[in-house]
Image (cartoon, rainbow, N blue to C red; front, top):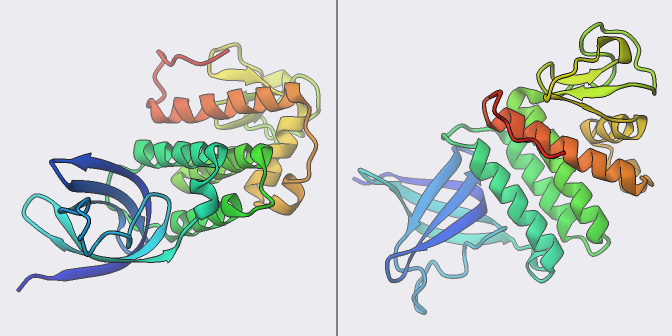
Length: 249
């Protein structure tokens, strides 16, 4: 007798295969990441059509075959139409999907990731979330996702000497995993200069204080530094701490 597995899942990527089939990459609350084969779902009369789609939460049912998991039933729990109808928000959602694709390689249940995804996409779908807030939400997701994966940076004290952080001469060390004071600064490519604005943003993100963070005014210069360091920090982690990392400058 074939066992049918049921769970709730967030769909973060999809790819077409064969004439009418599709493979969905989802993150489920019971089994973690799953790659589900949906046979003939692209046909007009498919019973699976409409129950699962990119950037939506669904109830799904699947069976485990010899070589793959096959989707057998699905129904939508929550759609995020404002995301799919807004190019800037859709691009942010795609970037989140790429992070999940890069970091989530095995089936490992993690309710914190599942809850974070629901929070992020609910906020991204909100009509009050404009373009600037949409981009901030991506980094809100990125840093909290990395923290869940075990890469939470030290942003309260110097990660090296544990001393108090002063505004001048601070930097973000990818290697040491946090903010470094002026006295502990190391001149290597895995340490990049920041300012007190970036520290404030990181602290609010890791406290998950979106109410304050979303109203924070940040200069264009500080925002560019924050984006560069955030992207390079995730790149450093993803590339296995290789000395050949190609960081942006």
